[in-house]
Length: 114
Length: 113
Image 1 (cartoon, rainbow over the protein chains, first blue to last red):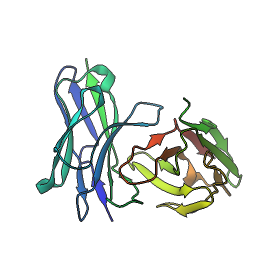
Image 2: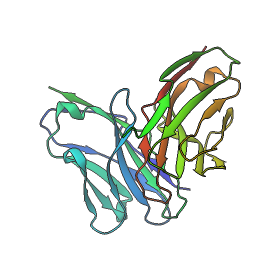
Image 3: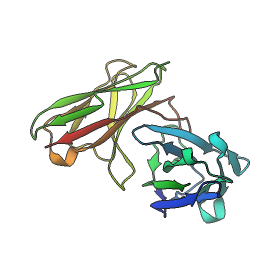
């Protein structure tokens, strides 16, 4: 069975600074990988996803993520954080089968300092 | 375009009471699911369905029941509420098949006292 680890429970960055949120997964082959964002009191919204091909994936709101097979990682990055990026971020992994179910990490809460 | 709609948004139950969380989607998605979200534990899958008349258990199904009589609706029933079921519940839907985007409802906050 697949699993996802988000090592950082809480990260604080200053507005305008760069951001990297870590995600490591465990699965026997290359899975589908996702990043979701959850604003307070809301459901989750997809930021980006990776299936295959180019290992650098662009998403919405200026986010990108890089898949590194050798490290089993799929880290999320943003060059310059805005106050509105404060939220909880979830990494998810899904097997590469037709009936795959997503497994979510425990989430990383991002706080943005003015 | 409503997407995934959950009701109620907030509910307080007494231990032992039963209730149903409603979920409807208007995207004609075959796959629907229910998750619960607890602090520091991410989302855990309760039950899911790959089409009308078909349901299956997820990671934490005990104490919950589901049915799928139509493509649009996927209600979650708490049979006899317990304080351990205090949580935020999310309904979600997607096109069937791995890798497709999951669309979430806005959540239902349930407190069992």
